[in-house]
Structure formats: structure tokens, C-alpha cells
Length: 106
Length: 127
Length: 134
Image (cartoon, rainbow over all chains, first blue to last red):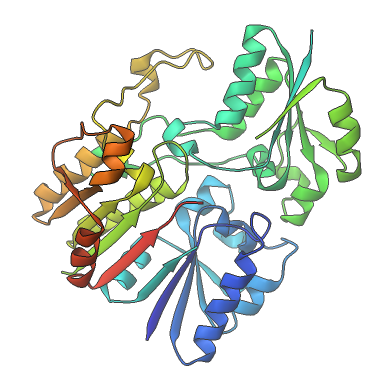
């Protein structure tokens, strides 16, 4: 099963972001193909140098994408992303939705 | 005359539709009306002080957005109007924001001195 | 070509979720998909036809210079794009949410419905995304 989990908040904005990262990892461990799409403040945690290593851990088993507009809005260059996170246009979300991925927004 | 402090921690809420941040805008409007005002950026709102934010190019269907928000420049405009703009230093460091990417003129405040800063103002709005 | 159903809850001007949702809808139409949007609670305000732009006294701009966004124009723009591309955009407001907010005046194309419509649209779609409010 394909999953798309969209995270709109940073780990500093909300304590429940860690839960959502954990959900992504658990679904991947269960044999599902999981994409975690970071959007809005959710991209802040993907910045290299950010003092929160939980996203790097998730990126080992989950495909993590960071929304290109959200990055630009926060002046985070694609070269400033942590390893395992790729910059992506919103079209990736549309493609996964159109492909029937089970989608959750947080 | 009372001194007003706006503590802003919620970032990018409604900024594309409003073309600015409502808390920063409101504080600037208070200043224009004659108030003495300051802004403290904490939490994710420290990002407002990062140089080079770019929201140009959005369009929805046949409607393009012509007035992209420029939140860093809005802070520069506040500073020019003598609104003191502060930023919690550790909140920027926690988020990996290099010093060199922050706007000049924004005053760094250590987290342990937020209370002292609030003391310097007569009224505060925690946005 | 697929069908995608999206539910929204945030009122205009209050959340970064709104432009993100509009970006997704725009991209889906450009990719040739049919899009159903169900507006719940405050999101019924997005298509309210009574929205007006205004000047910005802090920035010193006139209403024309400011060109302040009104989401109703974004909704109309999406309908226009769907017509151009030959796809379908269905914009359905929760009727009770419209009533309690007095927002009956909506842009052309918007229609009244209920959660049953969301369910029917979702059942007929490959993609389903619900963006709730905080």
C-alpha cells in the first residue's frame, strides 16, 4: 500500500509532529511504501543544522520530500537540506493522490 | 505613553493571503498611530528575520498573485520607523539559522532574558 | 486522468493551509484531473462573493496598487482553468456551515451540499485528502 503523509508543522510548533514521524516510520516498517511530504513550517525541521535529529532517523526508511515553495518562502536553499530529504514540487502530492495513495494531513 | 510589545511566535499563518504578517502589520500600524512599539520574534517566527525569503510566482488557475509578501522587508520597514525588533537567539540557533542570514538591525535576546524584556514594556500582545 | 476529492476547513486569511490547498487543486487541474472540493465550517468563506480588496495604509498603497488577494477570485480562477483544460472542478459548500455564517452569496460555480456529498465524491475518487483546521 502507498501512503502519503503530509506534515505542515515543525517539531517546535507542535509536540505531535514526533508522533506523525513515528507513524510514517511504523507504516514503512509494516511493508508499506511511505512518502512524508513536508510543507509550510514542516520544512523547517529539514534544514541542516536544525537541532532535531528525528527527521534524519525517519528518512532512513521513508521517502522524505520538502515542498519547494515552502523552502523558498523560508529562504532555505535545497543545498541546506539534511541528507535523505529532497526538494519537490507540489506535483508530487498530486501524482500520489491520483495514484490512490492513502493520504493523511497533519 | 505606554510602550507596547508584540510577541510573535506563530509563523506564516495567512501571510500569502494577507501579503504580510498580521501581527507585524498591526504593530507597524500602532507605531504609525504614534505608539512606542517593539516586536519580539520567538519560536518559528524567528524565520521572519531571515534574509531572502521569496514567495513570488504563485497563481491559482487564471489568477496570479501580484503582491507577494516580503516579511523580511516588512521588518526592515518597522526598524526604519523605530520599532525595536528583537529575536530569541537560541530559537534561531535551534533551527539552524546561521547568524549571517539574519537581518542586520534585529536585536538578539537570550532566552533567559525574555522576562527582563517584557518588563521594559507596559503592555504586551502575545500573538 | 483521475478524480481527487479534497476537504477544507480553514476560513480565509487565517491559515497557511489555504494557499497550499489551492496549489494542490491548481496542480491537479493542470495535470488533467477532475477535482472535487468540499468546504466545511469556516472554509465556506473562501468562495464568498462579498469579499473586497482594500488599500494598505501601512505600506502606503492604494487598493489598486495593493491588489490584495480575495480567495473568491482564486476560486473563480480555478473554475476558469478547469474549463480551459476540459476537466471538472466541483466546489461544494456544507449548507449548514453556510447558513450559520450567513455566507449564501458565493461565486459562480459553487454549490450547496452536505457531508453526504463529500462521501459520494470521495467514493468516486482515486485520491482523497482532508485538511482539518487547528
